Length: 125
Image 1: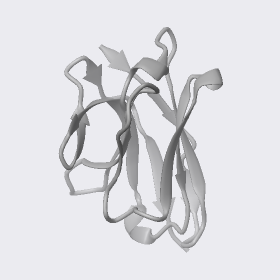
Image 2: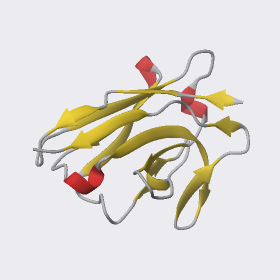
Image 3: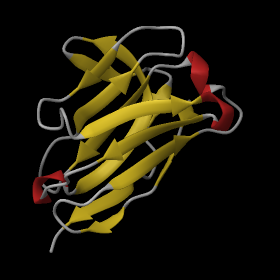
Image 4: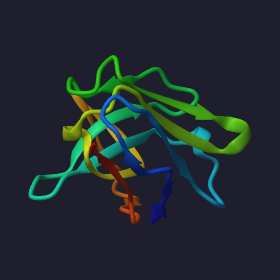
């Protein structure tokens, strides 16, 4: 099972920004499609953004984050990022990253992936 490690969460005011990081040891993330998901209290986990492997072409965002969040990868650091700008209170959730399969309209966790601990993002004044 490929389990990734998330970091970068925290408390931020509405309108602020955070950058989440997703890393793995022992695996080259260039070869995996990666997705960011989030789960708010009392709600189901939802896909936020998905990016293909370095050699693929798909890039997806949930409608609720389009224009505010950007997913990217840094091959040199073997890390996938989620830059979150213009944060809103409704973005408050635990954020997870995982290897994914492209499934319209977004992506789903791959059968060889497993959920990590996640990183808490709280948007509040």
